[in-house]
Image (cartoon, one colour):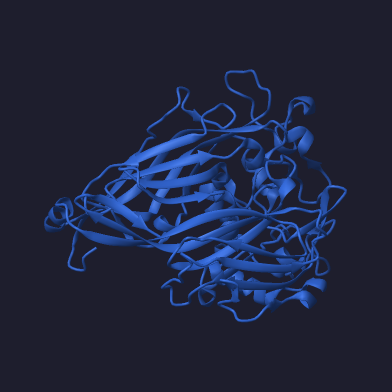
Length: 467
């Protein structure tokens, strides 16, 4: 965007999907798991941060034969006959965005610009690092149905609910204007693939932990989304700029992208090596989940716990993390030593150096202000000093109602370049070594996300992307 360009107008646009089902309802269970939007080629600039997916969400009971399936009834809140009710809710920390399994942005000529797989687990890290408990219970709840406590999120979905969620991809979140013109990406296709119901939905639990309605009553519940639309803002430049944008020429555009890799860790001393294929790598981070918790109605598939060991197939205790190392081509880099957190782990204290590097891989640590990370979430240590009658915390069975659920916001990550120019991993492997107490019979899934700079080259012959 030229510094001499003037903006004549800001257009607020809302478009409908290209592939609307006959019943106007997208559902993985009912065979409509893909939604596509087309933003046409035009001499204007897209404001990436303004892009929103809008619609209505409905959670339904299983095996419903009615034309309009019955809604779930979390905690029998509507007084439904217990034998005819079901309990299921969204991940409280991801909200509606958990239904999106993959986002693909591409040009109108089918040139892929960015693809994020396991998008919900990406948000499981990013959203919790960049938003506080107050955010989860106010502005985020209003737009995407999140909550800092799962009980609160469960009650929200007992009825049809409207939502309006941003698409937090690297390209749309970079802060750069996106040219939709011939001298740009030449229009954009947005394709959303939706996740299985068993991954999106999980059991509902009361705040005091006394009642837990999960696998038996929640299995088979499914979601539907209807009246979907995509809204965004366009900047209309002056006539001279519009003319320049419309006449084919040669140039380039730099933008950020996020990519995903999946692996499994099962050893107490394991080095994971990845071929990132990116020449300007900004950061890499990983989050973890017991493999059996994926696509499981009994578990939150978007939680971000520490590595866990299983007993008789049940993951019920943390595997102490002792040391973490980051490597480039087998050499320690960019931190030239192992990060030793064994003492902190054994004493259930913050693993400070691991945590600060993880935060820094998502948001510069010097700008770290809003977050769900606390002694409460990560170490189950109360940080609330409010009292009732001057004597006791507001709690039932040890659960403090004024704090977020004490579920970990954990991960491992590293910022590759503090100057944000990027490090070349095009022909060199990236590695992370984790030394822990994993017992060898407890597979944990590792979700790896890579933030890198891409360059889009355009010319009269077409466009291409260089990673």
